[in-house]
Length: 445
Image (tube, rainbow, N blue to C red; front, side):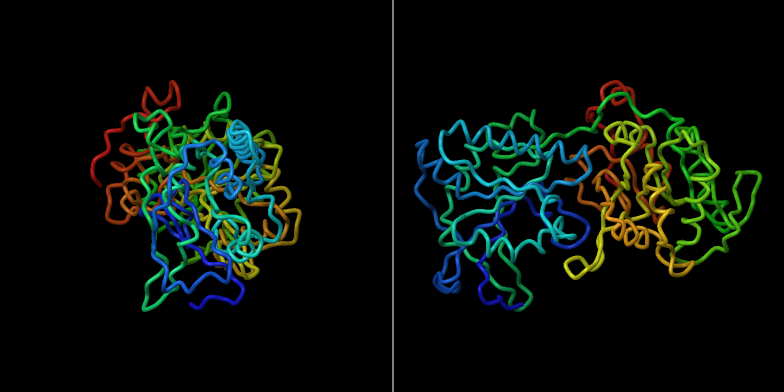
C-alpha cells in the first residue's frame, strides 16, 4: 500500500493490543494518531519514538491542547448523541480551566458523507488534509470514555509528534502500534485512575425503569430440523424472561408451539422469513407493543438486561439496534445489524421500513444485510451496541468481555449453551438491584 501524494503521515498510537480497523468495531476505548504535514523528512530516517521535554506550565499545556483534535465516535440516536455532547462539554470545560484556546472537538455522526466513519479509515484522508498543517494529534475516543485532559497532555508530551511517521506496509508489515499504559481500560472508579489519562464507565446503561416485559415482543427464527436440539436450550435458559414470544418455523409444531409463516426454509439468508415476521409484528401483534426483537434459535440473550438497555431509547424514534457490521464502507456501502446477536426494532422503525418499497431481492438473501441496505436508503441510521455479540464468548478476548455486561451471544458450536447462558447472561440479585457490574463466577471457557 503506497502513500497517496499530498497525504499526511500518521502513526497509530494505541491503548491496547485489541485494535482492529476491520469489522467488528474497535476494541479500544481511546487512541491517538500523530499528524505530520507533507514535506517532512523521509520516514525511513525517522525514529519511531523520540522523547520530548516535559512541560509543567499551564501556557505550554494550553499550546499543546489546541494542537489536539478530539474525535468522539458518536451516533445520531438521541441517547448516544446526548452522551457524546456531554463528553464534548466535559473536554471543553477542562480545556477552559487551562485558560487558553480551546481544542477542536468533533462528533463523528455530525460529519457529512462518511457512512463508514465509525471504522476510522474513511476519515483519514480528510483529516490529513484538514488538520495536517495545524494539529499534532488526532485523539479518537468513544462516547463513554472519560478523559483527564491534563494527564493526556502529559502522556502525549512524552513523544515528539514531529518525529513520528507512518511506516507504510512492506512485506506484510503495517503501522507500528505504541502501547501506552495511561490509555486505560479500567473503570473510572479503579484504584489505577490517578495513573490514567482515560477511563470509561463500566456499567449497563439504565435511564429509568426497565422497559416492561409486555413492551418487548420476541421473535425466534427456527426450522423443523432444529426443533429438537436448539429450542429446548431456549426454553431452559432465557424464554422465561420473555412475556411475549413466538417461534417462527417452516413447520407448525404444537408442542413448542411454532408458527408456520408459509415461507419455505432456506439454507442461508432467511430474508423472506424475516420480512414475514416484520409484517406479522406490525399487523397482528398488539399495537401497544413498542419493541420487536428478532433472534436466531441459537442466540443466547438476556431479555432482562435488554429491557434495562431499552430504557435509554425512545420508542417514538426509528430505532434499529444491535451489533454493527459494515459492507463496502467507504465505497458506497452501508452499515447493518448482524442478525446472530439479535436485532431490535422500534415499532416506528418497522412501520417506516414496510411503508417503503425496499424488500428482499431473493428469499434466501442475507436478511441482516438487506435490512441495513433498506434503512440506509431510508436515511435511518442503525444504532450500535457492543453488548450484542455475533459469536460465542470464547471467540472474544477475555479482556474485552471483562469490561462489559453482555446482552447476547450467538452459536452453539462446541460449547454447552446452557452453561454459557448461566455463566454470562443469567441475571443475579446484585445486578437486578443496581445494574452495576458485579463479579460473575465465569469459568475459563
